Image (tube, rainbow, N blue to C red; front, side):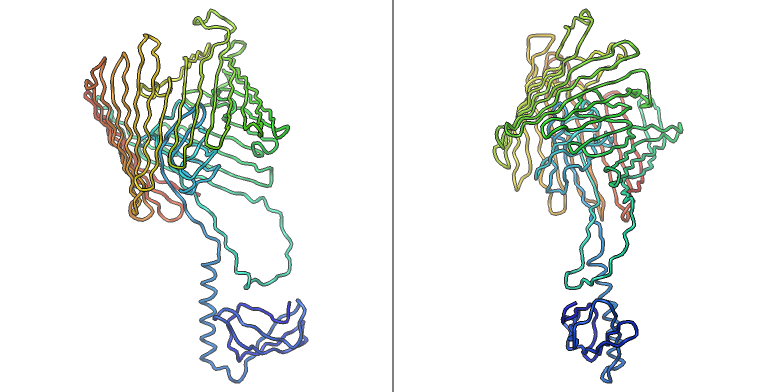
Length: 577
């Protein structure tokens, strides 16, 4: 304590302070003046030690009115400090679209300017249906690259993504108001961090033929982090059908450690981007870096039932991989071997490889390949080693507002020799995922984002080429938060000609609410006729935040066809913690 003792009390200059150590009066000091109604200085006759307390006695000049005013001002001061310098939370949220896809990555037009950081989770939607989650692996100002926690086959360009998170803001007291306190004994705590939400919704469906269905759905998403035990994390995601009183567990895993920073272990239902194509596995995943350039890992377990997602011991899975990185050459990649077995019989065996190269800051090149292995060469006329997936992707960022992407993709149908599960593809998206796709993305500071793409591929059933043209436009958010988007895809091949249009509208709704609407039009026909078949889909969703932790949802989805009408609606309530 120095010759001038600083305090955060508002006292009148007529106060006299007496300094005590125990019961002994050491010295007396008078308040000379106060500053800004916040602090005052006293000049004691000699510097007291840190032990001891001050006792205040009134001088004759202090009146009852001044005492009451001081008490009121002290109360106001403490109240203001508790608001301005306490622990607060800020809610950050945003929406975007899927703009590009590679073999194992999802690109979105949402970036750090909206408040996201690497490691955040995005929810992905198609109209009113929740498809799953994406984890952000790389982020830029207006875009991000994500790793999906669901199969890549379920994701399409134009799908909607959104996020919402609470940021804990802890501001300290100004340095001039800090008062030293005696150190206290620290008690060891687990420092548990909980997050997630619980939601309940009632759904209604009207299907063709007069069939109606009404049920209730409950959803649980829970995350628990325990930093004390090697950053242990527990994640659970499941959904219940109240009509059948059944519960489906989609994800349940425990993670220990951090990837690329020592030993990393996952137990439960795990996903591994290093073993692309293996899908969800009930078992364990282990990885460990042996140097800054090389890491090894593996996965072992069972394939969940593809329909019920329940534990199924029929199909065993095993996979091993190695990752490498050469910083000087800006080269990185991984190679993996994966096997799926039904008892002693082979279901599928394949080798997956990935290579990333960035010769310049503006250029990035990625190559992927999956080679399926067949011990029985007579199976479907396949060779011993057949490339079932090959992709070469290049991105050239001309400046912060212009980028060009080019991607060549070749795929064959995956053959599961025992489980006989094939990966379905929608008509329009299958055309976009094969062939040579090129896109140009432009971003303006006043008019928004536009992306133009074209895909050309040779058809397997003829020597002719099929073509797909795509156009995506999204406006900037207005001052009121309103944004519009339009996504159009034109397809033409020997089988059919068609066009798909999506028009989107989003805006804040009242206080802490958000409204999103979308209109889809499918029009296609066989051969060169594009107007033989029409399907209209109108969907809208409304979310409203009530308080800090409750959210209310409402959604309506109507599809009109030349032959049937389908209606889907739900009301829901969620509690976020």
